Structures are given as C-alpha cells and as structure tokens.
Length: 147
Picture 1 (cartoon, rainbow, N blue to C red):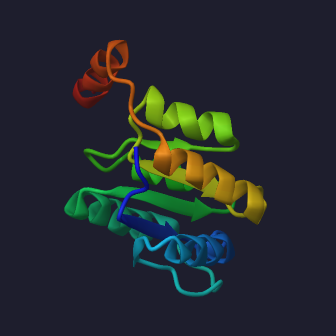
Picture 2 (cartoon, rainbow, N blue to C red):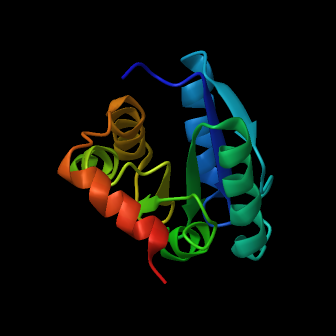
C-alpha cells in the first residue's frame, strides 16, 4: 500500500499535543490533513469530536487517527459509528495487525502514553499496511452484522 493522500485527525484536549505533532509529520509527507479538532489543550468532551472525525473518514473514504489521553475512550466512541473499525494501537505490531487482520480504518493513540517518535512509527505502519483479506474478511463481515 502506498501512503494515503488524505488522513482525518480528531483529538480531545489530552491528545491535542500528539495530534499536532502528527499533523506536522504527515503534512511534511505531502498528505492532505482534515483536522476536525480540538484546536487547543482546553478541556473538551471527546465523543462529539470523535464522531465528527469518523464522519469525515466515511465522507472522504480515507483513514483516520483519533487521539486522547489513553486512546481508550476515543476508540470506544469511534466504534459506535457505523462503518468505522477503530483499533487502539500501542506499538507497531498492533498498528500492523489492525490493518492486516481487522481492516481498521481508524487508529486510536494515547497522547499521555505514547511518545512522539513511537507514534510516528505506528502511524507509518498503519498507513502503509494493506488488509490481507481471505479468512479475515468473513470476520469483518460478521462484525458488520453483529448486534
């Protein structure tokens, strides 16, 4: 997979600093960034911002990255949006497997738990890994029909 042309970013206040660092990193690679916020480290509630980011992922048919303190709540909020498969990533292996096995279209990163260099490496892996399909596709199909 080649690096995508467009990426959606969304964060709460705890993920703001890491989002800004990744935004610069991706822009330097020539990737078009759709940043839906937040735009400061002032306290905000994440569900609305994450839903907005996930809607943009679906609208632009692209990948997305959401950021929070741990990334847990953001992943939970993202996965409430139909059509989104968000994986909480905490190392390069989880980033790769999220794409290869789960066809994740959004990754979640914890700004309070992930240093900038590690985040850049995880983002690179996530954005350049293809979905394997095969046996994994039936599981993805099952996720789409789960209640």
